[in-house]
Every structure is written in C-alpha cells, then in structure tokens.
Length: 116
Image (cartoon, rainbow, N blue to C red; front, top):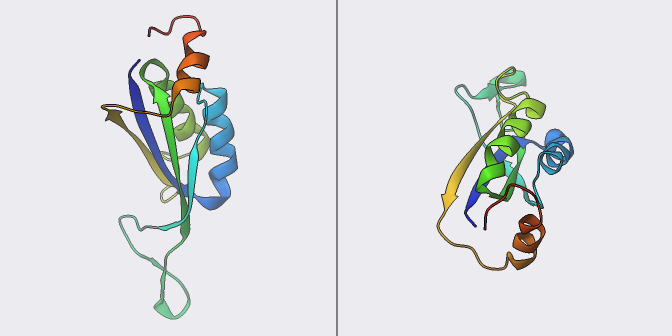
C-alpha cells in the first residue's frame, strides 16, 4: 500500500471543519500541531502598524494514495484556500515508508477498490 502525507496549514478556527471534511473524504486519522506561525505574501499589520502573526494549526494526514487527492480537494474546498487570501494552504508529499499503520492498512484493505 502506498501513502501520501497531506499537510494543511490553516487558521485555527477552521481546524475542526477541515478535520471533519477530511474524515468524510476518507481520512482515517490526523495529527494536529497547534500554534504554528506563518505569513503570506504580505505581512499583516494592525493598529499603529505593528506586525500581526495569526496562530495557525498544522494538520497532518497519512492517507492512502488512491484517496489522497480527494481528501486534499475536500480540505481546500472547506478551507476556502483559493477563494480567500490567508486562510491556509495544503499540499501532499510522497511517503517512502511508514510503520505503525497496521490498523489503518487493515481498515483500508477492506474498502472496495483499494489495492494492497
């Protein structure tokens, strides 16, 4: 079974909605890292011109290759990444090898259309 790592960096108030969308799209779990910081094309400025850095969450999903694009698209849709600037980004990476995913593989191998 081949896996992809989906990484999403999102506004923390969108985390729960994205986790639900990912699960509905086939994700079997996630890791959430709170309080990541980031900036986009332009630094956000607040009162008196002080720089503002919004807190973000980093969501990590280890997904089976055949479902990863569907999960990525669901995350992007719910997160409104392309519609609204600064809401977040998501991308996927190839995973060469993984351990500790026996139960995930067992659950996925029962799903129709997923090769081992």
